[in-house]
Length: 253
Image (tube, rainbow, N blue to C red; front, side):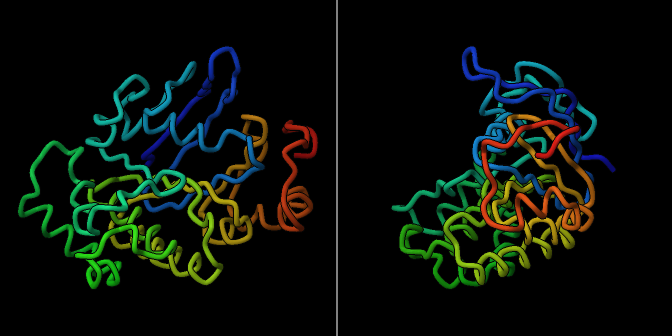
């Protein structure tokens, strides 16, 4: 089942076109990774999908419905959730209150259903239950990323978007968070779309992946297949990618 399908999506900042005809899809039970150099348009694409930035062209379909012009809160109520770059937790609020705020966009009070969901999330991230009365700002970077993911799950999404999952985290923590994410996707029958800078790991765990450069998709395929692609190997698996490489499906990325 296709959860998300976007077709020829463009986005602008003023007169500057940032995304050029992006088309991709995410299916139920998949983890889809988005990789590419800094400035490729990955974060802009995430903001456009959640409605924080308007698409200048194309269509965004979610669960078969055109949501291209829907407000962010309506997208969240339909089952989209975003873990933004930098996590953007509320550091002075308790961990429990941060999680409760995750249910707020659904337009309901913290009810029995929300309480049950909260307990399920505590089972996925036990450290958050142990420290639920502590302020979110007292958590480590990895724990804050867990909190940001858990807060998004409080909206009971069908698709969770995660912008820069591994940013600023140790490899050990990144591996732990990915293991939990794989479990969440499998157990909750949802899907995930992830912007990731740790390319090797991103491709290993991805059902499918898309490579962006200069606002265009220049490669796509199964994650494991892209791991063996010579262009991906030369640019992304041997040091940091260069933002100055040409972007063309006919030329090296």
